[in-house]
Amino acid sequence: MSVIARHIVASPVRSASSTWAIITDLLAPNEGSARTALQSISGVASALIASETPKDDPIVVWGEGPRIRIYCLFGEDAIAADDKDEDPFAKCPTIGDWHMSLPSSDEDLPWVEAELKQLATRVSARTLGEAVQDEEETDRSSENLQINKDAFFRP
Image 1 (cartoon, rainbow, N blue to C red):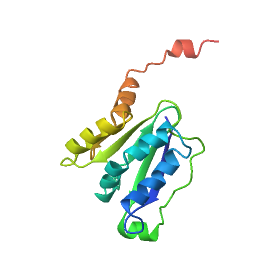
Image 2 (image 1 turned 120 degrees about the vertical axis):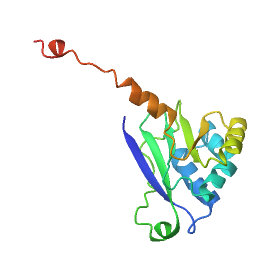
Image 3 (image 1 turned 180 degrees about the horizontal axis):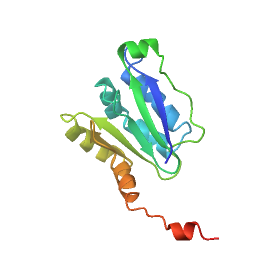
């Protein structure tokens, strides 16, 4: 599985809602259901960005293409913007069957999950430091991988 990371400049250079607008433009540059879904969760996503949850724990998007990890830069990192990477993706990450996981603090998780459940079926939340469920399933499936060396080296 390939992974692409982006680092988006946030506070104090941009407001949380402006930062989410940049992320929405990157993930869903064209009008459609994905863009509508991302815009519908703007309030929740902006609150999480304002809490600086995507600083060390990324917003993760997965589906038909490579896994996308989006981090936000805050404070002096945002001002210096040395790690800034806001380039568009070669292929739209929200085409087809896609999902998103947003990082949330423990205390915010209940209301974030409740809001997301009402607003967008493809977006979920997880506690800071928790792996994305889909990643864990992928990792476990490769644990039992066995190669038949006789078949592999057969002429």
